Image (cartoon, rainbow over all chains, first blue to last red; front, side, top):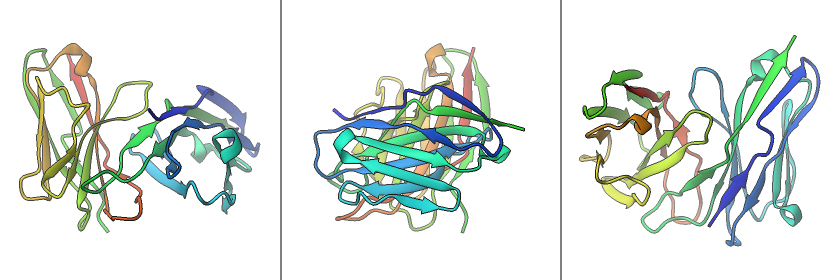
Length: 118
Length: 116
C-alpha cells in the first residue's frame, strides 16, 4: 500500500526566511506521480506541482522549488524568501498507476501547517 | 475558466438526520472525486467517477453514504443517517482523464459538515 509521510506538523518562520517542507513516500510501483497542494485558510486545495517518477530533475517556479530524490523516496518543497501569504497547510500526495477506467487515486500526507510571521 | 463548484458551504445537522452535497466539476473533466477531510488530516478519497460510472468506491461507507453522477456532469453525495464522526469537510475534485498519463485534480471550496 502507498503511504505519504509529512513529519513536520507545524513550522513557524519569519518573513523572508527560506523554509523546506519534507515529504517521504512509500510505494511498490515503479511508475507513480507526486503532487504538492496548498490549502489556505479558505479551505480550497490549490494545485502546485505534479512530478512523475521518471523525471528527477528539480523544478523551480518563482520562489518555489522542489527536490525529488528517488534514492531516499523524498519530494521536498522549498519556499525562498517566505511571505505572509504563504501561510497555509501544505499537502504532499502520491498517485500510483492509472486506475482501470481512468483517473487516478491520490493518497495524501497529513499536511504541514506553515506560519509566516512579520 | 470556472472552477469546481460545491454547495452548500456549511451544514449543521443532528445525528441520524440525512444530508446531501452537490458538486459541479470543471467543464470537460470526465473524472470526478469526493474526498472526506477530517480536521487535522489529509483528504481521504471516498468515491471516484469516470463519466457516470464508479471507478473506485472502496473507502465509501456504503451503509450510510451514497453518491451518484447520473448525466456524467454534476454529482451528489448523500449521508443517511449521519453520525457524529461524519463531521468533516467534504471536498469535490475533478480532473481530465487519459490512458497514459495522470492529471492533476482541481478542488472545490468544500462543504463543512457539523453533526451534533
